[in-house]
Length: 323
Image (tube, helix red, strand yellow):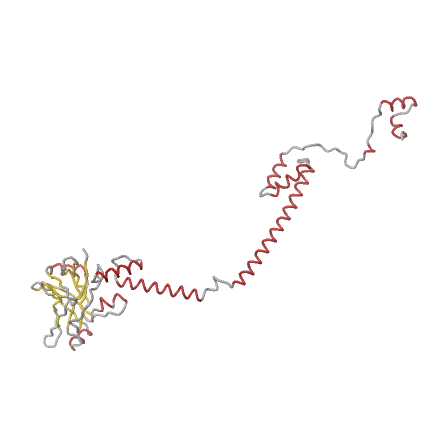
C-alpha cells in the first residue's frame, strides 16, 4: 500500500503558568486539514500508536521541519525536544515531550509558539497511520510540500519528475531525496577527480610523446639487430649440420639445399639431427681422394698383348716404355 508523509496544520503550544506542557496534542481526531489544502482522516488512532511502537524510538521535535528538509541533504537538523510516548485521547493523538535546554529557551521565551507534526498517510484512503517528526514553527499558514516517505512528491508532475531523476541516477523508484542527493554528490566528486586527472595526468602513467617515440625506435632497432644475429647464428649452425651430414654420407649433394631449407624452419635442426641419427650411409668411401688418372693401372687390349708377346715384353714394360 502506497503511503506519503506531509506536514499538517499547526497547533499552538499552550503554556501553563509560563511552563512548557509535558503533553501536547499531535493529531486531531477525525478530519485533519493540511496546510496545502488537502484533507486526511484520523479514524484509526490505534494504528498510529502501533506505528510509534514499531519505530522503537523517540520522535524529534525540531525547528521548521529541519528533520524532514535539511536532514536528507546532510545539513544540521538538531532537535529541541523528543516525543517519548503517545496515547489516544477522545480519538486524538497526544504526545509526552521531553524538552531539552534549547527547546525550553525557544518555547518558553515564545521564540516559537506552534507545533506542526509530519504525518504518514495512505495515499488511496487518506487515513493517517503514523507520525515521523514534529516541527516548531511560527507560520501556521505556511504551505509545506508533501514530504517523500514511500511514494514520492505530492503532485503527479513532481512525482514523475523525481522518478525520472532517480532513473537517471540509476536508483530504485522508492529511493529517498537523501539518497538521490548523496548519489549526485558522489557523481560530482567523481567528475572533479576525472577532470583533475585529465588536466594534470600522473607522470607515472604518462610520458612525453618525443621520449616515447625515441624509446620505441631504440627498442625496434635492438630487436632488428637481435633478429639479424640470430639469423646469422642459425645459418652457421645449419651449414655445419649439412656439411657433416654430407661427410657422413647421410645425404647427397643433390639434396643439400632441400635439407638446408628444412633446417631453417622452426624446430628444423632438431628434426634433421633426428633424421641423420637413423639414416643409413648412402655409399662407402671411394678412397680416390688425392689420386690422379695416371696412377691407375689399365689392362692391355688384345692387339697390345700380341705385340708384347712377339717381343717378349710384359704389361709392366709396355706401361713403362710403351709411350
